[in-house]
Image 1 (cartoon, protein in one colour):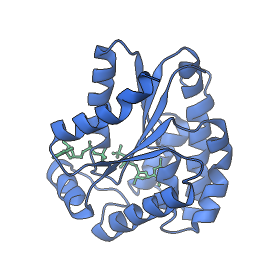
Image 2 (cartoon, protein in one colour):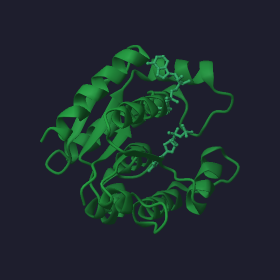
Image 3 (cartoon, helix red, strand yellow):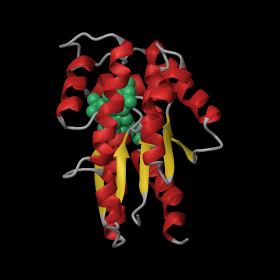
Image 4 (cartoon, helix red, strand yellow):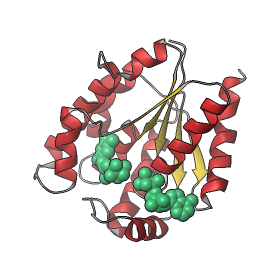
Amino acid sequence: MSGLFFALEGIDGSGKSTQLQLLAGRLEAAGIPCLTTREPTDGPIGQLLRQVLTRQLSCDSRVVAPLFAADRLDHILNAGTGVLQALERGITVLSDRYYFSSYAYQGVDLPLEQVVEINRPCADLLRPAATLFLDVDPDLALERIARNRAGTELFETKDRLARAREQFFRAFDREREREKVIIIPGGQSVEQVAEALWAAVRPFYNE
Ligand code: ADP
Ligand code: TYD
């Protein structure tokens, strides 16, 4: 495997999808071929999950956690669109959310130990070179979401965003021996955050 895999993490409204596109553009401009992906994926399980998140379908959190893990396994291994095969071709892959999102969001309702256990097969298959966490105050994140989005999802209340953020940090602490996590202050302008992300990623290409 020769490509690098980076996961972008953060609560909703932290700017992940904005920054993912900018970072991909900068990598491509530097001559580094790049693929962007996201979770939930656009595959069949991911589509089902989006219906749960927008409340078109209701589903218990004990059921939703294994569904996310199944979607993740497909994200890694899929013969046509999987991350592993892109990495084998030397492509850098940037993913909007990965297993820390499960630890954070599902850890609000389920014991963190249980969520980590469900995701262990995925973590053992593919760990990111680094998890890039865009850290934004939940108030600011909610403001951005309210300003820019028509529909809201299951987690988009201030209390749940604040709890998800706390769970991210609990999981980073718990997994600190196994995972490389880089915290990026995400409350600045789009350009400033993009600059900080670029500075975090660039050293991986000089090694
Ligand atoms: P996420 O993917 O983490 O939910 P988005 O990239 O979709 O976040 O950003 C949420 C909203 O906030 C978008 O409408 C985006 O234009 C806006 N936004 C993103 N980054 C910033 C920033 N640094 N400053 C102000 N607004 C931002
Ligand atoms: P989000 O990034 O808000 O998607 P989009 O911006 O495309 O609407 O994320 C989808 C939601 O899924 C978010 O509330 C977090 C949740 N989620 C989990 O609960 N577990 C997971 O493993 C993942 C990847 C996401």
